[in-house]
Length: 261
Length: 357
Image 1: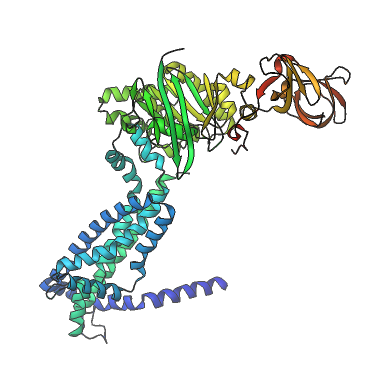
Image 2 (image 1 turned 90 degrees about the vertical axis):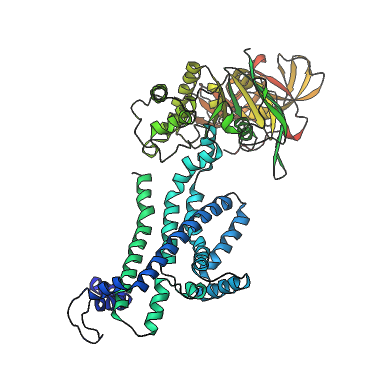
């Protein structure tokens, strides 16, 4: 009885959580144009989506920005972690706090402040400004996932490599980097996901004529909701879901290799 | 004595204003097993790190085979280190770990394969080439760390408490293996430990350190039998350290009783410290003893009984194979050559400090 209740409760939670997305997914396969009735199963909205050049261009922008911003943020974030690891404990705690703030900050505040910054420095709004702002908000996520790995790292590993004749650069890439890899990878994937589904910050830092998927959907929806948008949203959701599963799976797998029992 | 290989020339080092090494001078000879022994914080690990190139002294120089290597980075020094916590590369298998240094030196594939086989044989772990470090026990990992260091044919092997994390039995086995390896390889070992037994078992020369100063340098026998001050006596093994007065040459007054000894040259009626090892205290009948007392504690230790005897207001620690029950009146006798006379410490630095292990 108790167990049945527990299961019911969990089912209820998941129902509330996923009912809206499920509705969206179902509607994206609905042949009827109205939301009110089921007109049979179809892929036609997906097909129409694939023929929509605006959407495809936005998709291209989104992927490019996500890729570039997460790669650059991963490099910067990892270097920052190396530096912070060599700081005194007090300074490091302060630095960690400072890097955490942008994550907790409301997106709209980050978005508007980045917009103001770009205006005051005379940047031309467009692909570049979106990329810059995505790099900015991605760095903390990279630091957040690399830093714990960094702390687990035994300093003697690096020293042992030096001792065996490796130059500092060789020592870093041969022994430190592989140990950090799981953290770097999950930081990269997290940054990629964050960039992929950002709307608010992109909205404030994009110029006219440049769109990512999320800002494109927003514009389209204002003109009236077309079923194509259901299809597009479903695709984005699926993509983010897959990425998140990857993020969670990557470090775990590595850890299992590390501690065979 | 063989050729001089390393000379530490008045090395000083401080961290955050805390003096760790103060004007340290030390000479290490070729093919010597030197142990730096002392409690934690005595500067022994810092000395080793300065030798390895991981720390730079504030003043002073490190001379290696006639050349000043004080500023040489660790990757260019002809020494290799075995670290306290193994420091194996966990993402590489055993063969790759051992080959690391050789690959950097661009040795041929055949040479490397040969060396791996030889090193694994030396540390008794043949056939472990493809294992991962994490699948090995602590003792095996430490042996791999040693193998990884020696394939580079260093002139000196630095070992930083390499057996610290191992259990007693394994530690004793490894001690013998290290001595065997040192003899087979014919290279100089500089070994850091806080374990006096380890130091006594393996070393040719022991350097006892405390608070950044060298307290005594000598063979294990001389360190144990003729400690130069109370710190050394206290740190190396159990001992009775008693304030006494040197009445004249070869006669010392301990707790009011006159004991014959063999030391000369301390002057007349001079305050000194005497060290008497617990196994050198003989318990006899009260009439035969130089000093009379009562047994206050008794513990069976396996090889011998450990007793405490209250005599002359001092708790004497006594090791004996003969049993004297608690409460028995006994006499204390010490052979003259078992009484070690030491000058009172001149500075506070030389005094024994609490040993934290």
